[in-house]
Image 1 (spheres, rainbow, N blue to C red):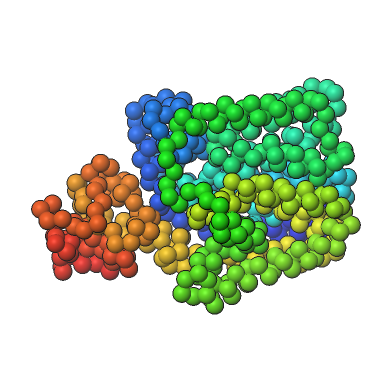
Image 2: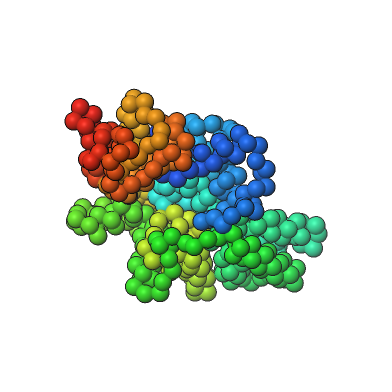
Length: 478
């Protein structure tokens, strides 16, 4: 590596720290409390570690590796320390970025690009800086995204490396590892089902040197056999999906395609919400402030990419992105940036390859990093209904409620379900030391139940008596 390359890599390491280390201050919120309670009970009762892999009843999501098992390990390691839990999530992103770097180096070596090691290093660092990782770092429950990225990148790297490993033992070992990574990915998140198709797209990208042989074809068919078993098990375990996960074919396809382009350009989800709500000018300005710098980085990389890429490779790259995001196109509404975590892998590698062949590497990485910093830090500054702001509101409310020494059973009336989600019944039970079954969520505070916790739409809460769930001397502005 040249001195400039090392300087660019060091700059990105420091910038990634600037972008992500503040996330360690984020409290638990939302589903975190459900998983905390579940891990606590599982460890307390000595539940088998195999139980999540075949639960007794139907579940909303079957992700035994990245949810129940991960949270049991996390709880044993750090108990209920939110800072350490977010540090583990950040560690998962680092591992996923390293795996993407390994994939980038493998692709670059197969395609005989200049300095494949640098392409891998820069690709991993650029991938780790992308703003689409905001929730997987700030929300412990979204660890499944980084776990999926880690396992998928390793599986794809093994697939690309296998045809070049000769006729010795390395080839079946790589392909066997690929099957293990695929199986683990399927048990972490449903979109891993697209992995065999991603393998084909990458084989097209690296052809002819990375063309699969008979051995690879046999293992590729084995991938589908594993997926068939997974689909059969999943169909028996998954219950009806929530309305926000309903799949439809209509205008939502265009909206989700537009969202995908935004995620790849670091456009923050909150800016899109502002555009669609009452602050379109602010939202559009923020979106442009995040997108323009990374477009500048792509402009710097474009000249080198034109020299390296062929039309077939561009088609394969676009195909890779569309396949990776494929399961999310039909979503009726619930679209988040981290859904594009796998789709962003190859674009990050291509951006790295282009920048590594440019004399303006530092300008390119600085623009890409600035783009992510604008998107991430801007999201942190937002109050409710911004996701991170909502999490901090929940934490401050919990801190105030703990002083009230509220005992169960607890009746709670949330005026805004979205705001209340950051707390949830599970959060109230965990933080106030109440049995989860003793927290009762109602639309109006009924008479005859004693005191009722009333949470207004603006976040103000009161702990008082029906019919209004309010006692003037208990009124709080939190």
